[in-house]
Every structure is written in structure tokens, then in C-alpha cells.
Length: 458
Ligand code: TYD
Ligand code: MG
Image (cartoon, rainbow, N blue to C red; front, side):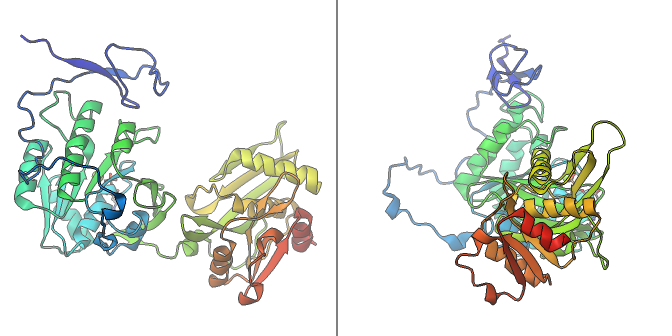
């Protein structure tokens, strides 16, 4: 019997090695190497995707000016959140990977999109659920689509046979970890299988110009399972996240060859599927009539979209030796830095206080423009004086307590005004070129933390 050809693969990052090693030299993880049978069958490419035109023209270099492309050829879905996250619609021939924890709603989202593409022939391949289960879900979403086809199959050979017959305009695969190519002998979901199946689908996408959506699972650590390699192969990586127990879901771009990577789509999971949330600030701000101490509103940007988010903090005397510092949705190191600034530059004795900070709505904010909102929130709780719930903040705080300028401040001011805020604090260095009279909101342009403190707490 011929010897099987095997190799070792890191299950974390996909690195390959001829022999077993304890620690992966590529990602540094321990004990992640697993032996997998490689052996490609010798039937060359029979059964894998073959481009339909038998006239294979060898590629030649062309001047870039002569290459034409059509921006309009993107497929617009009815889902505006998805369009934006993809950078303006579905690009023909693109491969999009959607990752997320089990039960977060990946299948629901993709089925909903499949059902909404009424002018296109859609093929939804499922290796996870039966026809009936998918039909049941479609009933729940109560959308009818005569041209949406379901195929429950995991072998890529048969999948390509069906694709050739059906000639779909859009292909959805749920999920890539269930697919199996007969060219590789290891089991479905292993690194080499995932890599091979993705490569076959990628070839199909590029040669036929059909956009392909892959659903991918996420490991306990929050990485796309197996597949760091997958992230390199596909054009766009979308992350579907949120708390399974809360109704809001966030679709985030982490890689995009056709658009910005900082885009964000927000959905609400309802009994009848996912609903787009087109005005996220409304849900991120808690409905409150009274003013509470410790709550402020920061005007941040996610991608191109301004978002008003609620910063909550609780400052109370520490009962045990070392005070606790805890932050959710905001960088803990940055929180410590801001606390040091408030202590040293503002003279507030926060060293003996427990400080808890929370960004409402489960968002993670990296934008430094919410620094001032964080500082104001902490001081408001410390002094137990409420900040009016009609005041917003958009500025970075520096180490010497200076208020620094942030990008696209005009958009932040405009969004605050739109949502009914009456005052906003920004940096003095941001006002150049701004026509403050244009806004119906009072703009406080400040340069020092002291000015904000005296303005808010007298
Ligand atoms: P699902 O889309 O199957 O998630 P994934 O493919 O990411 O594993 O998850 C759906 C979850 O959402 C499931 O717990 C039920 C819930 N759900 C609703 O609340 N409303 C709906 O209309 C649908 C279809 C699902
Ligand atoms: Mg699913």
C-alpha cells in the first residue's frame, strides 16, 4: 500500500510543518499541531470548479489606464446596514466571510439576505440544517422568493455540479467548516479541508464573477476557527457580534478590500428575524427623564457614521486596600491614564476610590474622542452632581489636562444637534474653519480640563 502523505498543521493559525512540534513558531501557541492526511487524489481537477470557457487566455500585463471597471455593478441589497458594511453593496466575484459565535444569528442574517435579493438567483448551501429547518426559518422571516434555492450538501464535488446547472447570481455557504472536498482525506472542519474548500470556492468566485458568502465559526478565544488562513484568502471579513441574551447585534468589518474597515451595522433580533437599526444613537442612549450623576454622552464615530454613546461611571470609596478599576467597552489602560490626569491636573483625590466605567449598549469604543465624556462622567459620579442630559462631549484629553482636537468634529456636532442635544464641549483647536453660528446647538470650545470642570460643576 502506498504510504499516506501527511503533514502537521497548527490548528490555531494554519502553519504547516513536516514533523510535530510543541510550540508553533508562527503564532506561539503550544500543543496545537495535529497530523492531517494530505494526499490529493490524482484525478487532477475533475469535479472541482472549472471555468466554463474552454478558451483559457493566458494573462498579460495591461496598462492600468486601459482597465475598465463598473462601480454600478455592485449588487445593492435592501439591507442598508449590509450595503454599508460591505463598502456599498455586494461586489461581483468577491468572497465574504461572516464569523460569529454559535446562535448569534449568522444563518438568520444570510437567509434573510438571500430572501431579500428578489432580482437575483440565490443558492443557499447548508451543511448544518435540513431543508425543513431552513424552510421553517424562512416562514418565520415571512419573506417569499421564488428564485432562492436551498441545497443541503457538504461535498464540494456535488456542490459545483449543482452550481453549474443552476448558475446562481449569489452563493451562500453555511458553514465553511462543514464542507468536504474529496481531494483531501482529512475530516471536515480540519485546517486542510477548510483551506482546500475555500480555495475551490475562491476559484469559482473569481472565474465566474459570482459573489460568495461563507459563514465561519468562532473559537472560544473569539478567533475565526481554524482559519487565520481563511482571513487572508477572502476579500472581506465581517464579524457578527453581540450578546446572545441581548437583542442588539453588531455587524463589523474587520477586513475589506472594497471599502473601509471601520464600518458598523446594527441589527435588532426580533421574533421575525433581524431588523436594521438605522438610527443607532437612539438605542444606545438610555431613555431617561431625570438626570443621574455619573452619566455622560460622548459623540464618537464608527466608520463614517457618528454615534452618540452613553458613558456611565460609578466612583465610590474603596472598602479594601487597593481600589478597584474596572472598565467595560473602554480601554482599561486609558481609563487609568485619565484617572491620573484628573488626580494630578484637576486635584481630585481618586486614588482611594473604586472606579467602574461602562459603555452602555455593549459597544467597544477605541475613539479617543470620548475621553472628555469619560472624564466628565467620572467627576460627575465623584462629586455626585449630574451632568445635564442635553450635553454631549467630543474631545480627547491629553496628559497635561489639555483638551485636544478630534477628527470630523462637524459631523459629531451635527449628530448631537439632530438628536436634540443643546450643548456640546469640543476642543478650542477644533473650531478653526467651523461656522459655529450655523448650528442650533451651543458649542463650548475649551482648551483646558479646568474650563470644563468649572462649566459643569461650578
Ligand atoms: P442562528 O441564525 O441559527 O445562528 P447561527 O447561525 O449564528 O448559529 O440563530 C438564531 C438565534 O436567533 C436562535 O437562538 C433563535 C433566534 N431567532 C430569533 O430570535 N428570531 C428569528 O426570527 C429567528 C429566525 C431566530
Ligand atoms: Mg447557523
